[in-house]
Image 1: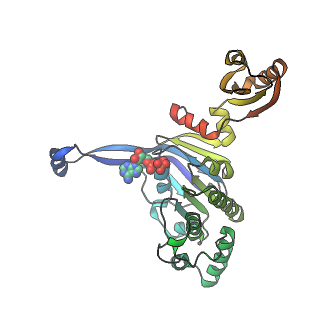
Image 2: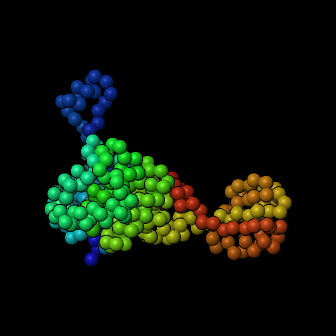
Image 3: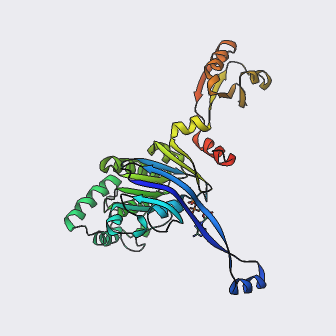
Length: 326
Ligand SMILES: Nc1ncnc2c1ncn2[C@@H]1O[C@H](COP(=O)(O)OP(=O)(O)OP(=O)(O)O)[C@@H](O)[C@H]1O
């Protein structure tokens, strides 16, 4: 049975329209007109227990709206959602015990208090016994490398330490389903890696299901075998990262270091010249022509080094969103 089941899910927001100026304000006061923004449109997917799925899309695509419907913060306009067997919007206690929502730009820890105080409040809210609290606290503190940090006021922690403490607070009740909205937002590269390593570890240890949004592709490539791509509220792709490359970028980059510099004109016959810098040239070659082109380059040109690379995933996704291709 899927842990997350979403069928034909849609959400539209009514937005009041106000003309500028005083006349607009007065009309707006007495007679409001609304238009509707379709934030999510007929989205369907299923996620099985233990899967880590990346949720990608440009700004305003509908990711946060979907996460809010999955966690019961807002009611869908239409469609069906089930998470761990529950209807999220009912916000039943058994449901809240099974899920967590972490938003990189929001915090639940109290700023002026040591994190440990907020954690004790969470333990009380979730009915965690003192003994169990100590056990979980020790385990998560070690996994997150937060020794000695939880007794300092939260405002004195670095951004990375604060995010890790937020994760600790969000996972204290040992949820089975994790909704993570930009959990590495604003962190430096080391802190990003630490959070990623922790999430991988947590997923493996507890077979937790994870739906993760991030603008850092490194988070997605490090953690997710499967991605959902949403654009203008519609689901455009659901499948593996490799499949995404195959479908949207059926070409490879061939980087060649030549013995002698050659003109762009001469090189053009081997493929689309992406860049040319002295003896270093990069060709874009259609995948089906790859073997033929590489052997032609090696036999006809004087080559010192040759490397075939996949195009950067950020670039591919950027192109998908720009073109709006399905
Ligand atoms: N409360 C709201 N009222 C009206 N419109 C909203 C509301 N929340 C979101 N929207 C609109 O719905 C659309 C989807 O927004 P959403 O926040 O879900 O996108 P997102 O994919 O999470 O974007 P980002 O990556 O920028 O966080 C946007 O056009 C946004 O302006």
